[in-house]
Image (cartoon, rainbow, N blue to C red; front, side, top):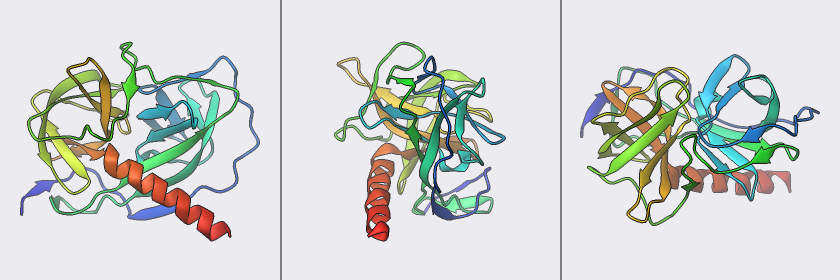
Length: 222
């Protein structure tokens, strides 16, 4: 069992957002993957936008008080639910399951798309998952796009090396691989840098957990 150093500290949590505050979005706002978002005093990167469901995704540790806004403070949505169980401590066993995501209900009066800042469309494909040695890129609002390879695939998360970098504010950003047919396919949501290895929670695990959370929330309301 391999262990890696962890630089981030978070409290294990699972929560469902409360009633959304009454707010109106600026219809000129565009919501897209890779944009800068704010929640309270927290600045992060939006990882993915489902334009049909009008749901956005970022890291769970990006959550904050109040609504979600863009970098100019314009309202774009409210948190639906989140998970954040990044363990305390300086090391973590690679078989430990990590969950770190937040889903966001995007306001009905803003524009949405799934186009990355570089112009490439970001899509999901359940057949595409992170593989050790595979090329990947990450986009964060501080560092922009950096690319490298998957270093190791663990239990619901993976580490990266060979060029991937990040700074505070990049959390929640999309991690994707460009396929031979020139698609940018989402494989993860950026979590933190553990030791010398940037890390992300895998999109397949995140997608499953968010779906489970919706079912649990619906059951609790019955």
